[in-house]
Image (spheres, rainbow, N blue to C red):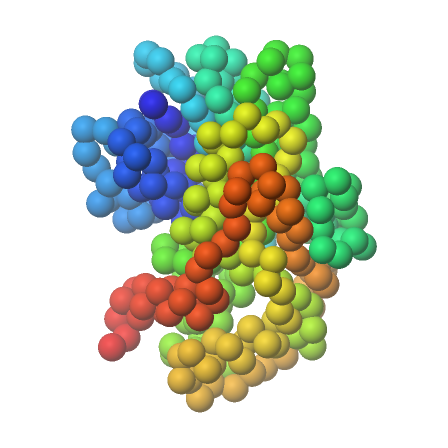
Length: 311
């Protein structure tokens, strides 16, 4: 197939492009490089891979047939979407509108990379797809949460009204190589702090929970969803839940670092719990994560050691 990946030079996007090329698809990567990097896709250059530097909030022109679109373009970490709040809202709204219009024109399948953030600071645990969320639309995180919630509504409207063959993946915390050092999320923060022997920064008392999915598992979930004509949202993530304090101690154990743990004030609207119910993904996609936390973290540590030039 000929497949378009928006945000294809980002963390998840570059891994997805790589995976699609392994299946002999022709891949077009679009990215405006606000948060993506050419370094993430430099090794993918070939006759079957094309990179276009473009902002998907503007009109998108693709010559010839197109079979599927993955819409991943968006800042994804709190640090980045707070730095680019307007761009985040625009790529979730205008960018989704433009890519859906392209899917309609080309009669292509479409997958939206949504997020567990649509659940906000959840009052239901674990989070299932039929939970509508507990979100503050005017808080600082609202620029990301509401952009994705609107995007989901737009995808369903295009499916119901125009008959576009759509899918929605609600992605939970994912980690692995090619995450940015300044990403601001807990995995790159803790790993870079441990490797440089700086205190690991834990917000609040560390009792808030997260679930961590290794990138290769997540990508397999996206590919499985592409192949399945299922139109309602599907959670993709690792259901193994742990507290941030437990995760910090795991990082210190794996790294052998003697760094201490420091505690800071909890950010506004930071979710207290986060754990996906993946019963639907198991049933519909025959998918569940396979990479253990220790194995995934070791691979991620190796990437960061290279990035930081640590032996």
